[in-house]
Image (cartoon, rainbow over all chains, first blue to last red; front, side):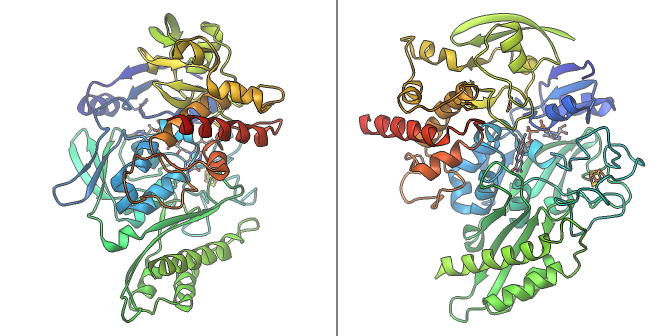
Length: 332
Length: 182
Ligand SMILES: Cc1cc2nc3c(=O)[nH]c(=O)nc-3n(C[C@H](O)[C@H](O)[C@H](O)COP(=O)(O)OP(=O)(O)OC[C@H]3O[C@@H](n4cnc5c(N)ncnc54)[C@H](O)[C@@H]3O)c2cc1C
Ligand code: SF4
Ligand code: FES
Ligand code: FES
């Protein structure tokens, strides 16, 4: 590891000014991803600006009835928060399915959103990787591709985004609040992460020096209160998702017709994947297994598979159907 | 870059000069001679380095010591000290009674993780396998701790010897005893 300077930021403005002024400086959250990357040689910053102790640790109801989560709130505290458990169970379940008890006690909301892919070639500096070293090639294409993307990949990168929390937040229509050197801005979480295209080195649309200060959830509804998250992995716990599904359904009790739906997928793409095609099929359709299959099929019609990851398409389809069925049955 | 920091380790104030690159785990083991936290993987994947940092179970291998100036760290060897009597913590006693280890390498991390885990459950925190996330009544009433819950909550601690069955038994015993008593 190369030597670096460590600074504890006094406030968010100072943190942003410091990092924005230096291309070789980065923010430090809980460090559970960044420190690992510094050990592996994947990241080599000359300065760390610690934002984990900034006063961004509140989870509070907004005047409009939504929920604002500070960027330094730890994953475990967010998952255990009474309002999250009652009103946004998909978020609580997504958080609880990620990493381990120890890691969730350390990991922050901002750091979780900006954690980088677990592609094994990305983490191994002896192999070509366009995300780590633009232009060097992609060792996963034609290599060990079992964990890689089936939607939205490019010829330059087929990595997937690893966060569970982001998938839950995406299904719940979260907004991200950001502070940059030029001031504050907000963007839908759906617009934060990018597809790889020809610049896989950029995971998100954030500019260097932009700090995530908070994530905001819109007011809860009957639908979000019935939301859930299901993660499929290679062992029962402490493993990343092969495929995951966050979903919420609003079904008219009399007619049995779906009024509204939210579906987001993890483990399938370079970003948390909002399944808009599936949602379109669901709206106005009877809440039956047949509709759920049609919806899942519509979303996955665009899937492109490789040698090792073809299993993800039926796995994602079946998981979507199972989650929607469980949501419907739970309401009865 | 060198930093002079102070850590409160197992109840004692310790000043030490560390390079910014030194992890908390290396500062404890190599600089302060506190060797109960173990280095298993050094990448957050095994739990052997678990300590109680500011009262919560956390990994010491994925964090720099310099980021913890002024913080309190409790390791397995200090659990008794911190409780005030210097004796064994009930979790440690239960590991002995239930044979919760073989080689013992993962054990200090298991014990610290278990102490933190029992506190979390006591505070009502749910887990991935908790059926009802928002049970009626107080959200901070203690979470149920059956074997499935214990396994899930302890999944961040790997045991290469596979002593899991007895570790679960030890924690079932501790949880039952402490809840029976309160
Ligand atoms: C063994 C292991 C298993 C794991 N399993 C899972 C899993 O199953 N599911 C899952 O979702 N995750 C998993 N994780 C990943 C874990 O969730 C992330 O490492 C964690 O959420 C990152 O948060 P952090 O605060 O530690 O981020 P850091 O490591 O501090 O930072 C990550 C990145 O975000 C940047 N950053 C941090 N805060 C901000 C901010 N406020 N604004 C702008 N930039 C910021 C940093 O510069 C860095 O680039 C696992 C990790 C490990 C080590
Ligand atoms: S898939 Fe992306 S992250 Fe993985 S090796 Fe290829 S370019 Fe790198
Ligand atoms: S040594 Fe820290 S988790 Fe393995
Ligand atoms: S007792 Fe040997 S690793 Fe757990």
